[in-house]
Amino acid sequence: MPRISVIIPVYNDADLLETCLTALANQTRLADEIVVVDNASTDASALVARSAGARVVFEPQRGIPAATSAGFDAATGEIFARIDADSIPAEDWLENLESVFLDRPEISAATGPAEFYGGSAFDRWFGRSCYLPSYFWSMERLLGHPPLFGSNCAIRADAWQVLRQTAHRGRADVHDDLDLSFQFRPGMTVHFAPDLSVAISARPFADWSSFARRVSWGVGTVAVNTLAESPWRRRAARRAAAPRQLTPVSGIRRP
Image 1: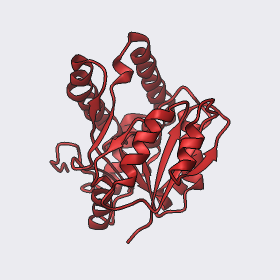
Image 2: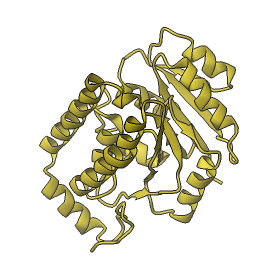
Image 3: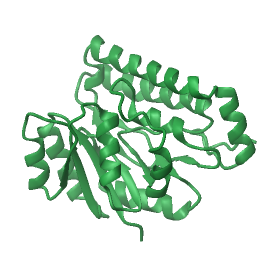
Image 4: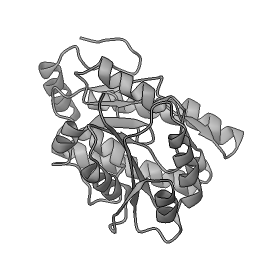
């Protein structure tokens, strides 16, 4: 069985992190290690992590890309599972994640959807019915494969050694999951697994400024990466390398 490391970047989210770590402690398949990256928090996040038996890595450079990269660099497993401090994985999340990689040895990464908790009923509906479907649909067409969703994804350790060479880890104004999605080379595959179940907070939709900031980071992430490689050239290279191995969100294979 592969060793699975769970990586959780955190900044001043002690209470949510405690809930997340409790969910990980109740998994039907336990993590082989949990790496919490303290991104210069000023609250008790690091203490909460250590109390739950997690290994704490300190990353002073603020920003989720830097924190996520530090966690991946520190992890010792063969599969790096990535969630956020506000993620609450279902009790069979790691068991299902392990099965995905065992059943599909050719894939480099896997990702899944999420349900939303907290906020208003509209916030939860918007996240579930509009935000996430739009993200997966639009980015799959731009990338040529499903994008990673940072609150619910995993990559192989050997794939990270390739991705880390070009990831924009020093920029705090990009989404780390989408940025990593752009780094996949031709022949590397991303699988969308609908059975990977995670709940996440609806707080990004609580106010316009938070949502606008996320959208601006998304636009910036796309801009930074499409300057390096146009979408047309990217898709052509991936079709040439692996014409039938990219599985879209819809589950329908395309030539």
